[in-house]
Length: 253
Image (cartoon, rainbow, N blue to C red):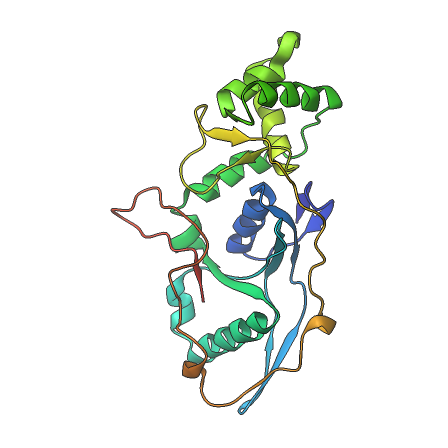
């Protein structure tokens, strides 16, 4: 079980890839909310009815909806033709209602991504208390720096005249990222004192995640090869820690 500060409730996970995915969504300032195993999708095909239960569903601040399937590795996926067919049908079904469909793996995506380590460090401090005074200090700081600063300078601003220890200010900063009061890129590189941080111009409004009643009746003809390519490499923006020894995909199915 994972207690989410962003969503205000518990989120459950069954495998490490799901846990890593939940931490990433909790830390990403662009994600408004997310839920675990959100619905049961039934797809009518010429071979019968396929049932699919996604692992995660989340909302971006611009209203886009993402649906996530997690696995241990891509080999675990590619060796099962029936499972591949189910994922391709699910991708097509979600596309009909404007949802993006992702496959995230523990081995290729999370074990070799900056995002996994950055999100781990951020969410460890998600329950740190922050005050109105902290947010006022941030407002003055970003007004002085025209809306963009660094992690180090923002921590100094949070310390203010109270001379709080640096680790306290850093803990507050990470909690404010989870609360989406601060924006930072968790994907491209390790977060350091020199990493850029911004105060978002807009945090977006609450987005209603789709429910089973929102899905149309879906029926497909023919085999799954007509639906789309398998494991396309243009998906989630994971970046690898060491591209000479591993490839971090973060991809759409």
